[in-house]
Image (cartoon, rainbow, N blue to C red; front, side):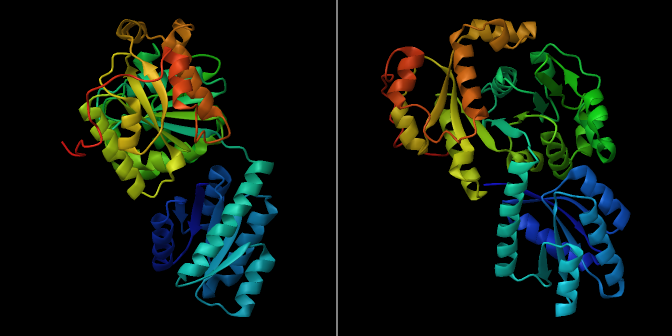
Amino acid sequence: MQSLTFITFARNPEASKEIQDALNRSVQTRLLAECNNADNFFADLVRLRPSAAIIVLEAGNAEKDLDLINKLVANGTETAIISAARDCSPTVILGSLRAGAREFLQLPLIPDEWQTVIGRIASFSETQENATRKTGKVVAVFSGKGGSGVSFLATNLAAAMNKQTLLIDLNLQAGDAASFLGLEPKYSLSDFVSNRSRLDDSLINSLVTQHSHHLSLLAAPQEPHEAEDINSAHVTEVLHLLAHKYECLVLDLPHTFDPVTISAFDMADDVLLLMTLDIPGIRSTKRALKVFERMGYPRSKIRVVVNRFSKGADVELHKVEAHLNEQLIGLVPNDYRKVIGSINLGQPLVMSEPTSKLTIEIKRIAALVAGSNHYTSAQPRKGLLGTVFGRSKSTSSLELMEMPDTA
């Protein structure tokens, strides 16, 4: 599902709240900014390049509002302009369309009309993006249980991408991705947030920390108290801006479904759900899948990866898949010595051990993620296991099908 981004302009707080609520109710739409000042609105549209902008026409300011639409269209924006008004007379509707608005919405919003307009904006945005406006892929790495190796996989996945990639550490209170890369950042996400109104390519380059030609890091706040000034709207805006600069964003996420993490999920094209093959790991993965389902995410967005997989694992993989009702798209081998060595040295394993089995599997996952398709069927289970480990499945005595979902 394509994520659509919006900014709004309304002098009337009631109209602004109505549109904001409608945007927040949909899993497909993201509100980046709301303005009641025409100059700020124009600056935000140029800076944020949203999918669409909604302008509420007011009876006493109709001429100014139509001039604003004309100005936006004359600027050559790729953003779809939507006008909205309580006055739905033919004069108002035709006036806004002639000024350059692509759609018109009646206030109060009519649900069927709203959905029709959103559908048309999605088609327009997809056409525009395919033609001119390429945005980077956003990949979130998450586990519902601590100690599953999220930072290790996120760091190595980012290092394995053969494209301009930014690793973003969203562990706001205790992020440590910098140490996995052997970096000492001068700036962090808190600097991005405090300077977000003037972020351009030059400022972005100065605030991220470069690791190699293809990989840079946006570090977590250096002091825990700095995280208090970062909210979900900030993260949505920053990710949106960075996706226009980098070919790939890899998000290292904490283990909780807090508002900041949920905003990252919303912006992600793919969520790699990391699990370990133990009872707590399987249970937390099952719970996370149920949360994602309640949030309305398509199944193609969530992909389960097993970390620390061992040939002697006490679980039959086909039973894990049946229990989760989800195919496992990756099996990262367990090699404690190499993993700890790479972490202590601050060197991604995919760079320091290019021929190891861990590297081969992480690069395979990276290639799947980087591809244009959603890899709904990776490799047949036998082929995948045979390729990585030389056998079709593990032996087990653990019966997952009857395992309860809660601890």
